[in-house]
Length: 189
Image 1 (cartoon, rainbow, N blue to C red):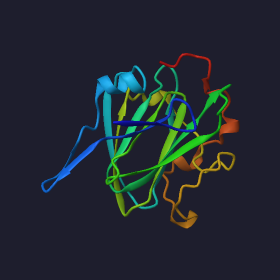
Image 2: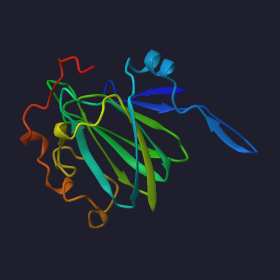
Image 3: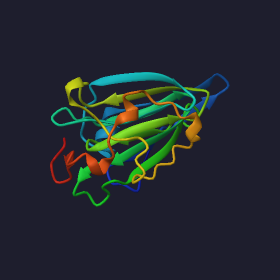
Image 4: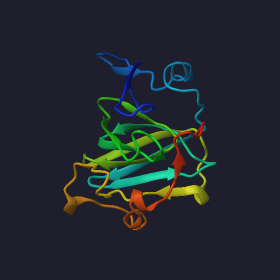
């Protein structure tokens, strides 16, 4: 696996080594040992999958402490723009984001640590999105910020007229109006 640092420390792009021949392809999508040696010491406890149509924007979601989650995300089919936003108060990269195109063809994955909001937009006709979490889903701990917060400057690569969001995601506050969500100096693991 090729582990690529991004502009925000702690957020990584992971590229698997793909073996192809006349039968198709094979790759190791996850190795706990390699992940712990090269990314961070965490154990994933839950896998989730969603299917969405072109123009869907899901996010920007997170879980509050003590149920915060790190995520390892990938696309099985289709193409998305995946986004991680640093929402840790005191962080030198607070309010900044990393955006990575994940596809069923490039097999890239994005690791999003705790203290980040996460979302994605679907750039293909449909997309099957899969992700691992290192903490269980806790509905009472759900949090989100506005996917279209102008201060974040995210280009979702979908024309505004084509964006589809849930009623729930349409009503979230901007980051500057959310108060302190996570502390950069707090050990989130």
